[in-house]
Image (cartoon, rainbow, N blue to C red; front, side, top):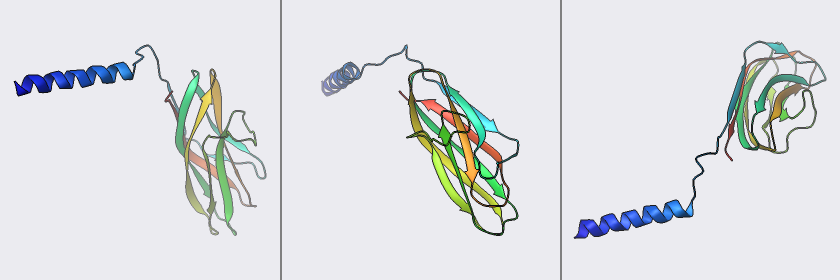
Length: 152
């Protein structure tokens, strides 16, 4: 008797939960990814576009990745930053898109900038990853990834 009551109670909870949170089997979430594997020297005093992905559907996307940068040798601390934008080479970053900044210490070396953010689009949209640095030594990007997963 007790097990029949427990089973009936569990079935009722499942039915109420499914009714309260409708599922849309027809909705298609999208995923986009691109890896940048070749070295690219950033233009001094300007912005370099290093990667791009296309968000194929209207909706909200979680955008993640990382970008590795190298400055060698350097005589001073070199600030570097990367961010996402909706136009190649743009100085205007996406308001909620990934943005990351750090410094490469004097003497040179590698840094990895993490990229985490989100972006909502109304239709197919290209998203560009751009990087820049401030200093006199050359800075290169040498490997990075950019991914977008549609979450809404």
